[in-house]
Amino acid sequence: MYYQQQQPPQAAVAAAQPQYSAAAAPQPGGTDFTIFVGDLAPDVTDQVLQQTFSPHYPSVKRAKIVTDMMTGRAKGCGFVRFGDGGEQLRAVHEMNGKYCSTRPMRIGPANKMNKGKSAIP
Image 1 (cartoon, rainbow, N blue to C red):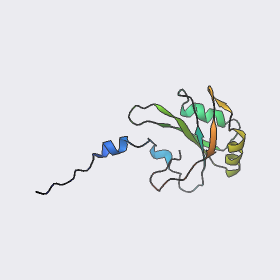
Image 2: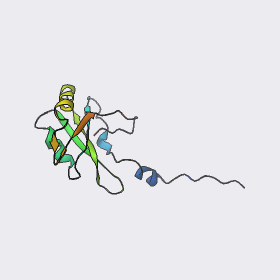
Image 3: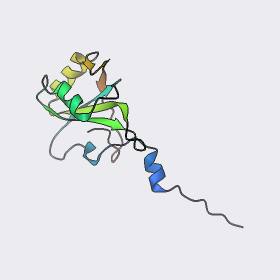
């Protein structure tokens, strides 16, 4: 007797992966420079993260907190996208250890992900 192995439902596969919005991919026609921001407090939102960086770095385009797809809760990390590579490098050095809400941030360059699975806001 032949048994065909069932494929898991797409919803289950997607739920097992971190949630990134469709806006996570870099926009065509421009170069974006992104940093990873870790050790964020649970109360930090996209807006709070962006407001933490934008007064110091005018080229900040967007900030995005990574959320759990099942619960909708923040996972304690996010990404900040810059339009200027120099400001991105400055932010990595200058903002590492600075407080956002109640915790010091851990900052580094964002890793590039496979095409179609961008972790960049």
